[in-house]
Length: 171
Ligand SMILES: Cc1cc2nc3c(=O)[nH]c(=O)nc-3n(C[C@H](O)[C@H](O)[C@H](O)COP(=O)(O)O)c2cc1C
Image 1 (cartoon, rainbow, N blue to C red):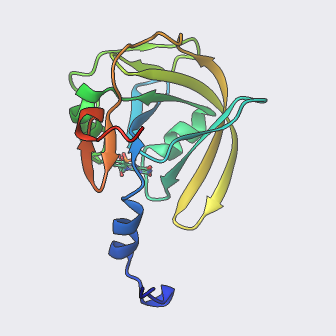
Image 2: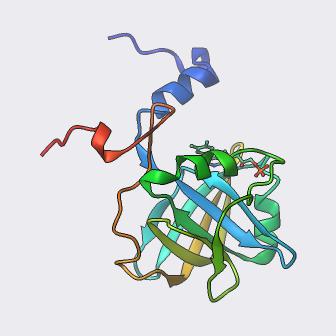
């Protein structure tokens, strides 16, 4: 087995190796008072139950996240299998990300996108400097009912959108 020296590993190779970690896809949303804002985010995970904390990381070049940070809160919308187009739309810088997107405000005013698998709304609890990203931790202030959407998740693996049907059951 040959293991590359870290200094010789390119960013592309690092991304390729990391892309073998399959995940769901979320849209992180907020509302700046004038309009809804949001971006596609794969790096979401649940952190703590007591208190209820979740986290995501965001590129420091994001133009949307600083506007979300200014509001002190954000919502996480976990996409369902049918929503690969929504993921693509919210990943495009400068595009009209909200064109044809149905949404409603949750209690805090943050946008909840229609037909997602689940959502949570959070206050920003902490933010950590992490290289070219920020790690953002949110404390959950509201969440959807457990039976919000009966469907399957949209998955992301090796740079491709997948569904559970694409993957073999392993147990
Ligand atoms: C499948 C997928 C997953 C992504 N995951 C992340 C992520 O975890 N963190 C991040 O900062 N950007 C992620 N992005 C890229 C952002 O969505 C994109 O850079 C962002 O929308 C840039 O626009 P902005 O300048 O409006 O923030 C992802 C994009 C795609 C297509």
